[in-house]
Image (tube, rainbow, N blue to C red):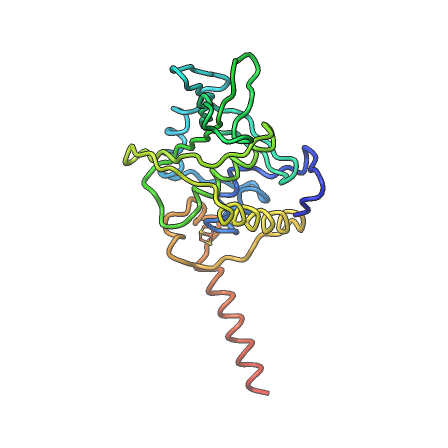
Length: 231
Ligand code: SF4
């Protein structure tokens, strides 16, 4: 990834791919480079949950809160595009630090953006969901010329909202994943399969065949090592 340039439309990677890539780089490449996709019950449930949040163009006002759904997002600097589930805009007051609020067309005053992403299931031990939310915040920062300190993940299974701070460390992880995606994308290659516990819940397991690929690679490697030691 080259942060000193601005990416054109046909070079933009999908923001949703960050979650795929942080789960498994091969899964991301099968979906986003090879355009393969398999539905399983988890992806179906996830789509239902997103449909509830996804009502394009709708902006609700609830007191000092504006709620915008399915807002298109883009970062030309990162080469990333997608859409948010929900962006809340909270009315700023005198305690809001300079640079953390923005003007909105057709609205009076200053507003603090706060992205919210809907997820099926419950909070995960890894950082996949936080990475995707943070990437949304980085897109919003570039679009609105503002700094966003936090957002939230809403988990369908627990009906629970978890706040996420966009720390330097989380932002660095977004950049690291993106850099890996950009390299594979520009080479047009798909990483090799490696079977692991996460494969059991992967919607692409029947396309990927990780056990077969892993064992054939291992078989080839072991055979090669035997040849080497025979000499
Ligand atoms: S089956 Fe496993 S290795 Fe293959 S794409 Fe899914 S998670 Fe990755």
